[in-house]
Length: 296
Image (cartoon, rainbow, N blue to C red):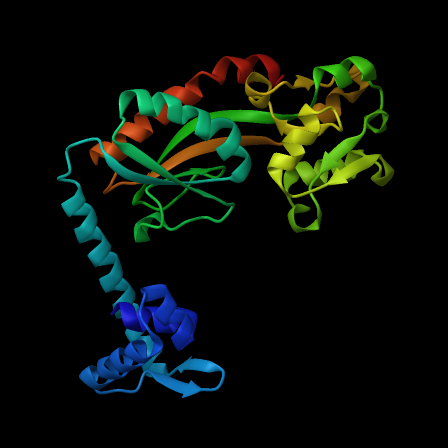
């Protein structure tokens, strides 16, 4: 079944073979054998790859259901693992990984030295049901019944930069009084990017980058002002830009985002995953006072 699913999803024998760790001739033989076993041709082979037949599309529904069932069996078997040790894979957005998640690992190491963390740092929403990750940090609460969400915080983004630049700027009366860093075109649709585009003139943008680490570094170095969630002031040398009361309405329009820790219901009580969940919930709770006092 894995042979068929890889071929259907990738539409290319070579790519499917690499995904499964096979050579292309073995992949081709096994795919042909699978077609013969069910008595129907599933793919047309051509120069441009594999073209699924109508029969393949019909088989896909049953194949994916079997894949989910197989994953469930695996999770149930792993649930008998009682020792808090082993690998836990976490999906997390890049900016959060460096600034918040990696420092939390020192607490994890003190309590559970046998746990190894694998981080996937991307904005991609991983499929926890297919075990692409064990846990995920997300800004949107999932709605799938098999997923368990826990809100870690709610925080407003604020204009942040180095304390030195804050002192130099004084109390600004126009957002164009400051230099800014913002995302480039591939993340222009984000709420923080739209806010900057609305309130800051193009000539006051001194850096455009969709690399969150570079935006944070620019703010810490005093190169520019960045819109970042308030908790960043507790973990980096950053301060909130002071503004005149006439700009309060703009501040109120700044995006407020949730941060959710998400796990799969069938995996949540596996000891190593439960241990990481416990540490992350406890670690992020320390930022709540900063969020409450500085998000107003």
